[in-house]
Length: 221
Image: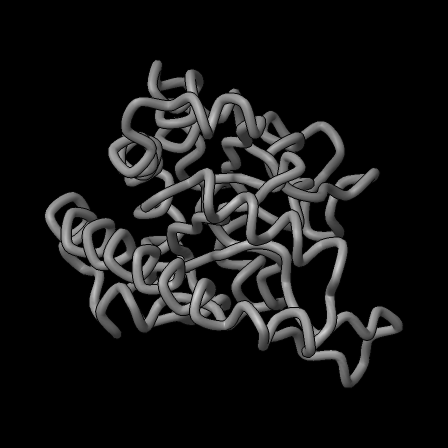
C-alpha cells in the first residue's frame, strides 16, 4: 500500500481525533483501507502456504476496525491511530495464537504474534509443554531468523516462579511468562524507506511460524 499517504492521514487523525475531521476525509480513509485489505489478502494467502492450518476469514476480514470501543475507557478518542490485522487458525480470534501486523506513525508499526494474556487453562497447557519439551522451544527461539527479527521471547513475566513449579526448575525463566509474544518493531524512517514493506511483513511472519505452531500444539494436547 502507499505508506506515506497512510502515515500522513494517521498523523492528521492524531491531531484531530474527532468525527467531523474524519468524516470530511472519509474518501481518503476508504481508499487507504482498500489498499490495506489488498495487502491483508496477500499476507493471508501466503501465510496459508507457510502454515496450512490457517483458516477462518479471508485477509480483509482479519482487519480490525479503526473505530475504538470507548465504553469502558477513560480515553474517549473515537479512532485508533493505526491499521492492524490478525491472522489465526480460527479466524480473527485474539484468544488463539496468530500473526499480527500493525501499521502507523510515531513508532507504532510492529509485526509479530504469539499469544497475549492466555487464560488460566491455556497458560497451564503452555507451561506444561515447556516443562516437557523445552528443547524444541529453545531451538526455535534461537533460530537465526527468529533472533534477527525478534531477539527472543517477549511478553509479561512473573517476578517469582509460578505456583506449580519450583524456583530451581531448569526452565524457570520461560515458565515465568504470562504472555508469549514475538514482536518486531520498526521506526517510521525504516517503514517509509523500505523498498518492499509488504514482502518484509511476510518475511517476519515466516520467521515466526514455528513459534506459532509450538503454541498452538501446546493448546491442542
